[in-house]
Every structure is written in C-alpha cells, then in structure tokens.
Length: 127
Image (cartoon, rainbow, N blue to C red; front, top):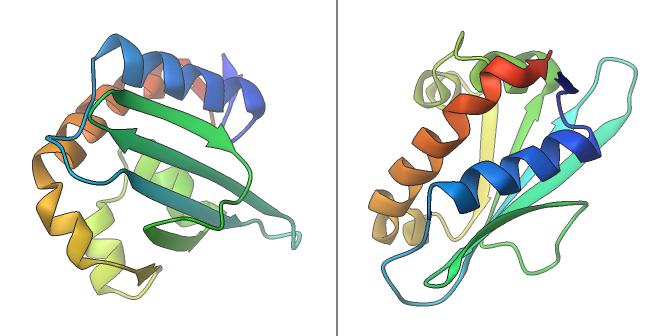
C-alpha cells in the first residue's frame, strides 16, 4: 500500500501511466497541476505531464502548468478513491480549475486514457 499523495504514490502513478501507454494525440504538452489542501493547512502538489511521447507524474508545483486543479483533501481523496465524481465536484465548486481550460477539450481522449490508467491505483492506495 502507498499513502495517497506520497512520493511513492506519485511514482506509482507514473508507473500506471507508462504501463498503459498514455499519450496525447500530438500538439503541445499538457501539464495538469493538482493542488490539494489538507485540513491541517498543509498543501500537497503534484502534476501530470502528457505529450505525444508519454506521460509521467511529478511531485511539486510547476510554473508551466496548462491547468491547475485546486481542491480539499477530502474531495481529492474521494475522487481518487472513486467515491466522488470529479465533474460533479467541479460543478458544485469543490474543485476549482484555472488556466487554459480550452486545452482540456483538445485532449479529451488523452484525459480519458489517463483516468482509466489511474483507476488501478485505488487498489494500492491508503487514503
């Protein structure tokens, strides 16, 4: 088991993305930054970078993020664990998205592949 948002979890996410062969269908790289606010005030950050050559998860914050998702730990762990729907949480204002959101539309197929690849992490993640 790996702890959600730990360096080991980020490494497992990279393994899952690369094992699934997740790529974009061309164009500029897509960098998705996640910012997760914990109840104790601590902030976890990681990003997923996708391009035509592959995908990887990296810890920390990136100044070149295409989009930034911000949410509480409760929401992030619920989405990652499959208990909450990311679209509903966005519509309810519990996930805030900033940046070039139009880029997400152009990478819809890649985002679906990304989501499918990361689903397997649920089995090895301690939330």
